[in-house]
Length: 305
Image 1: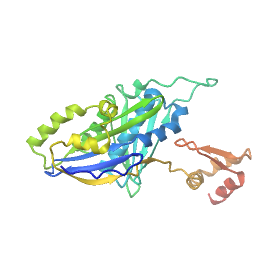
Image 2 (image 1 turned 30 degrees about the horizontal axis):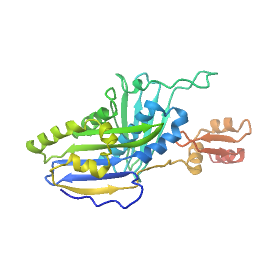
Image 3 (image 1 turned 90 degrees about the vertical axis):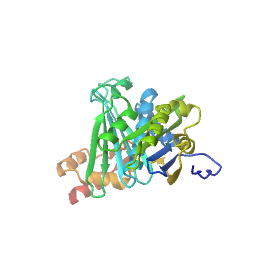
Image 4 (image 1 turned 60 degrees about the vertical axis):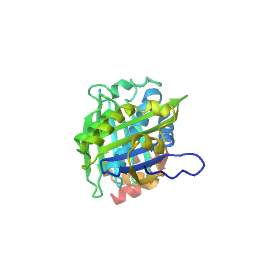
């Protein structure tokens, strides 16, 4: 078995390991995402990311990173979890540079209701709920697939990999929380490669019965990437082919990007924004950074439009 080099002393941080068994049977990815999902949840906590919704948010963000690492490491991957009643969505992004972010899009409360109840998490894991995965190609084109999310995030992720990517995949994601803070989050993905034969396949199938849920592994501290990799591939020779420690929460918004989006609006819309002569205040849904645009800047966009 290939030994993974020990990590330097200090905070563990979020990490991704990728390995292939030496017999060419399996590709395995393990990751820890605790810090990334904590930072993303903190940005959404006042907008619904609490309790079981925060768990779903964390699991979906981890799932998006697994999809990107397994199929599209050089592409942006967006994963959307749509509720069964089609009124709520959780949207997460995983970028090629290791950054990730997410947003909860919940129903607008009725007028006068200041503290509406959050939707039940069950609407995201019941019949009718959908998981959509979209990859932005280098050309700008988007490839996407949609599967049922009724069985939860892990089950939906396996369905997507098998139906849309046509790769037999076993995986699980999970998170533990205490007092509203994620204490541990992560996941794994095992894919069958063309060289797999019946013997190793039977061994792996039996072994993965002990890894159907991440909760127990997270609770006993056995979900760190190196530990999880060794447990998944116990007794199998493997080679680590990649390691990343740049997984983190980061938003891609900026004054330049927001201004560029505004500049694409129809002339009539920009004129409407100018009508009251006040500062235009725009807030990013992902990180809630606020951007202000004075009337003179909007007039400049109007002249160029």
